[in-house]
Image (cartoon, rainbow, N blue to C red):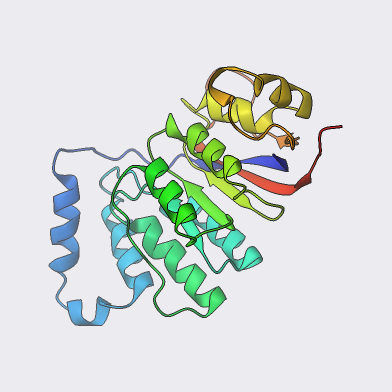
Length: 239
């Protein structure tokens, strides 16, 4: 299992926005109702600018520009040829990250949408030989599956030195099982792997993680949420 280090990066609160039923459809009509739509098509940043403009009045569950920049900086640093995103919603992050990967890797056909369960999709990608290792993976889907999907990737040996995970919505109200797992010591993780839901996964190589938390003192954080960035920096073999 991977040796990693972890950072929590905050996303500070903006002004209050409304949340209404059908706002996703309103966003669709807002974009397609633009007078110069032909000049917007094929230009990812123009589409993102419109989505950001719409979000000034509506709360949308997109990654947004501040947190999105954290991930695009990772893409600029790592320059992955393949990036996996779990969870899509309105496609904001797919547009943002896909464009960043394309610029850094020099790709043409760069976004593939797979509809289905994340664990089944990850397993299929591995077994078909389409993805043998994780370069960058962004987790922003069904929160209870963050941990099980990570374990699946570890089980297949897809988490290797250099792999980077960026998990959204982990701080408040948070995702305690995922955070406990990625922040656990070598000894804690190896002991937990002997039984329970972790049994069956590779326990010969176990992760150790170093955590920097930006959570302030008190019960209520000063920001809405955070992205947890976890890097695999090496292997520690069981003696």
